[in-house]
Length: 390
Ligand code: PMP
Image (cartoon, rainbow, N blue to C red; front, side, top):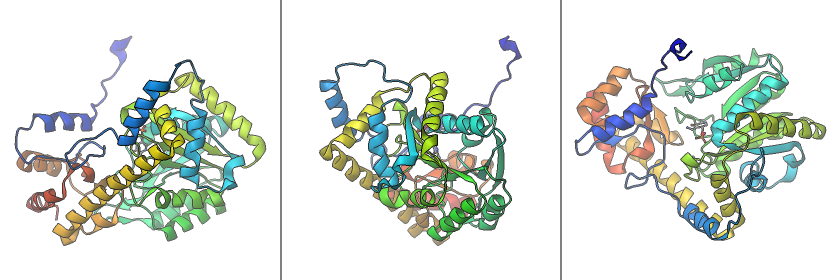
């Protein structure tokens, strides 16, 4: 039967990693794959994670099954970080642990498909390349609309308003809670407010993808749009990833939270989420969530984690400032947030940046600002100028 399969295109970012490793030039710069890097170019295991792993090694006395919902203490301890200290939504919120933000999006999509198969998912483009395929594979119709203009690096807000205003009651709106991937362009709080009003007026359901909390302006600020929306709408889904802000990537740590209109619907949402988890992965992997739980249970480890996350956030924003200072026409980079900016360029230009200048970024023009050092800003700007990007 396998002869009937068609080849799928290889992941272009993985090819980029290999090409970067094979490049022997000094001064090559890796702005490709989307992971945090420190001033030495490493993606370190965070100090609090090491401490929590040591604690687990010393104290964990069983690895027996936990169940499809995973570690519910992890799910509960994360809640105030995302939703704030107010117990306002608590009685209408339910969460499960998932394998990364991807797992949360997958279960979220299937839950929507189960509850309302005719719901469309509104997706602003460009977006994280896995969004549309996840929704499509859960048999949901995706309706995309232009979210930004990469040439001007501006949000196309009329296009956002049009898309939301022309949607049917019950349609789902995918929103990047902070640190938009791939553009780094987040809505202003005024725009978030307008979006919130549109969600309410047209009875739309937000699906908030929060994969970079703490890497934009800090944990609290990055959660502000999510909290504002939840305060106003009746129903919502939040797909959360701990893989970036705890540096746990390969451990696959995330959670899906659902806010229901009525307290009575909580049990239904919970049992459906658990049933969907059961047929996808039976139970999520434990280790990463146990690490996050251990950190959040300990005031010392929590303080260590928060401090290191702040350092990471400051480093990325420092790199943004260095690029902006090196070229006035890249000043927008210092106003964007998170790991990424997406320059408007052809894939030939991205290839020329690699071949002639040793600067590696995705063919789409997405660059990971954590991949550089402030001292690289001059070389990056010179290369972008030489290739006609500025
Ligand atoms: N959403 C966005 C916007 C992302 O960028 C990513 C990861 N690149 C994810 C979700 C998925 O995160 P995870 O690795 O935890 O599955």
